[in-house]
Image 1 (cartoon, one colour):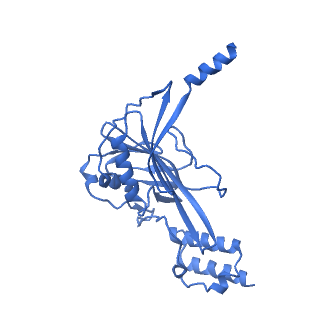
Image 2 (cartoon, one colour):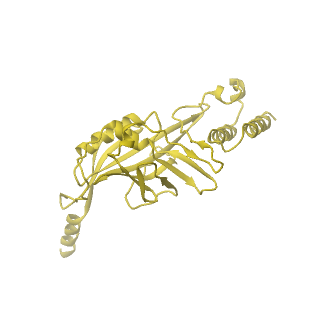
Image 3 (cartoon, helix red, strand yellow):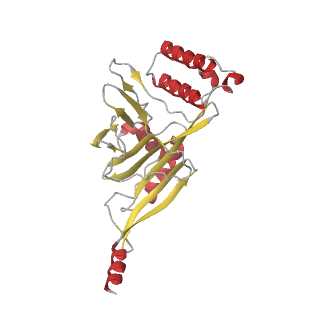
Length: 272
């Protein structure tokens, strides 16, 4: 009997996660998340509700990028791509206006990448937003992370205090690094009144940016279109190799000459 009472008491002390959906279009979810203990919300002293326009949220979020890899060899990703930015910014603005001091904003967005109409890869980006004082904090949990192909697999949840991937979030103008994977933006700063295109410089001084694709890559973007009768003869492995090669080309990791040579080698080997 005493064991049962202890079990019931421990359940009463357990922390419970409470989520409120603000926006969900199946590929993007924006939620308010808080935690309760004994039926009472656990206060985190956030400055919520905070009324920040969707336009200003958009300008802040679009200026944040993530560096994957070390300084000598890396890829830079925006945390939100252009097509999904307006909906996310609007939902985040709404969520901050509804939140109380115990709730943070959770953003999870899945990008579908179809190649040749044969297979689909899904990549997850997730981050947490909260406001303390005059600072708009963004804690990135995952960036462009390939989801398991199992349709029953659950999407990993972002968590404060956890590093779920190896990367560094880069702070732009009007921001500073609060941690390796968190930036704090002075959200009232006039710099965020207008959109600022976020660019980065390579070691040679060139300004580049990695663009994340939301749609299938048209065949006519591969240099020379592949006729359907050729595509039908290619194995799934060759199609994956061609897709990976195209991705290297888009990232600027290989030259056009190297891209054309390796593409021809793959097609030639498939023909043999």
